[in-house]
Length: 171
Image (cartoon, rainbow, N blue to C red; front, side, top):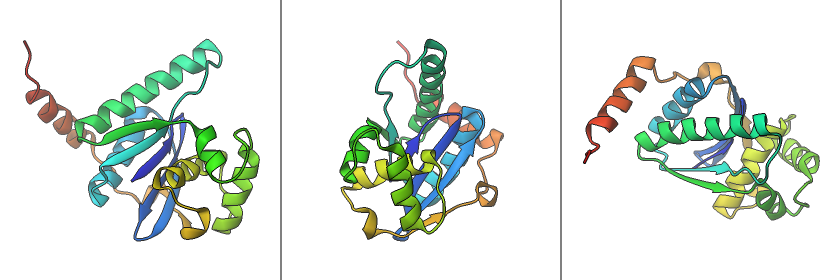
């Protein structure tokens, strides 16, 4: 399973060999998708849980986040990955904090990890743990440097899209 805090700086958390791996992916949705698809393919991940937008922010921010969510969802669906959305406030509450205690959750997860995590990473970890119905104390946490991931090439991404489109019946 993988959890995402979707934004231009996308917090990512996934479980690998009993360890929560975390990172932040910065850039356009197509680049983020190439990283995510590489991890999903390598680990045979079939489910991604992402932060749902709880409310309207300003119009430009909301539109931007919804577009990014849609783009990433499209790429993931092409690989037959199930996508669920959850409120990060619920995930934070499951860690025993108040819904708006973003900095408290960040500190809790930083303390558990033994290094400073970003709020994006912390929210992704909270979502992952909530989805797994697990406690923070159950898993060690490691940061992954995105530069160490062999990303899906644009050519492969285009082939994924082409194969998926070829299987769609129109009419």
